[in-house]
Image (cartoon, rainbow, N blue to C red; front, side):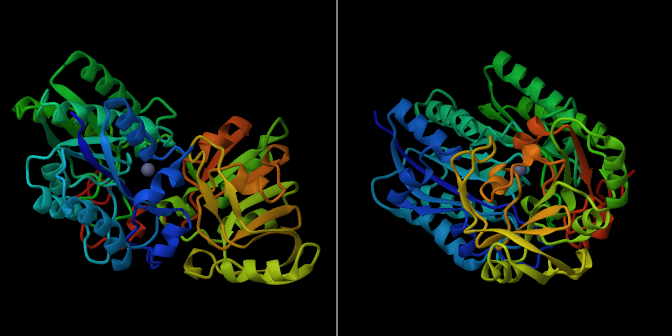
Length: 494
Ligand SMILES: [Zn+2]
């Protein structure tokens, strides 16, 4: 029997402290396609929907595509985006023919101007249409803030198991396999959620080191293999710059049937996360310390990569903080490159001036000068591009990234990629499309917390992580939280 399955990718990680709303144009700059456009739009990419299509072929599903939408993290999602994305999903669900199952590829930390828990709201509205009996699987980013509403209305919860996230396709396939069994009547999945009063934990979900996250993942995979009732154990590290009551790490166990033992299991995993809540594998350096470490690093093969985690557009920061860039220029670094500063007005000036021009500009610090004021710089435009390239790294392979009009601006020994759109620097191509080979540089600066490691760690001789104090700072006491459940670690506890 052919099963009719509705699917969608509708994702956003919303930094509620950002003053930049997330618009349809932000989605157009990354991934936005509807209905029949979707198979071509995702072909050859690492997006979850490719995993859903693989499953549909394997199980003979009649797959109904609705929307494929992903945008760089930033402020609350506009009503226009919600109506387009959620609207496409709900309209298809209302359509004739009936559904046997649903698999939605979500992030799990989307906040819109109307709904703090947007994914929960989407599932509530979907259930009103399809009723309680059609099985619904959701895939999540491992930085999801999973809510009780999401757990109540989804039957299957399945988050990524890698950070850097390089397993989107495998995650969708894992969720689809359980959905297939549910549609065949072999299992009756139910979701059991456990949380603690934690804003952060599980080492931010990193899977590149021995830490609470990787230990729990190992336990989860063993348990799934040994216990036929445990269909999935899903571990979420949470997304902390979200001022909302249900923020934070969580464990969701999808069990066969509604036995209390699944809750006990979820609580046991969460106990371990709580006991190890202080663990953080990163050492966050201020700019001066990072530059001093750089001076001590000496020579060697490959660059030292300096990552400013606090101005990471991948966590909703503005990407135009100037603290680190100012330090690098002031230190007189040679053979360095910097990716990126998001400053559309300056990018337009540099593009208009053209390659070879010598110009004075006021660079960066435009959205909120509190995170580093604009820098008055004299330099040379060494390249101009349209900022468009297809990513080749493990994080976004096959996905087109669009920096918008872009220029490489050389100030002293630092080649700065000045972009018009906010895109986390996770790809070698962010530099190489503009003629910079980061492998040959002594210093490569990126605005990223951890995803850069997928492509840059293999070429780096050392990595330094900086917290320059920008919007995505790890100093949580600096953020004006108002809506959290209190007390909460680390703001009130320990
Ligand atoms: Zn994530």
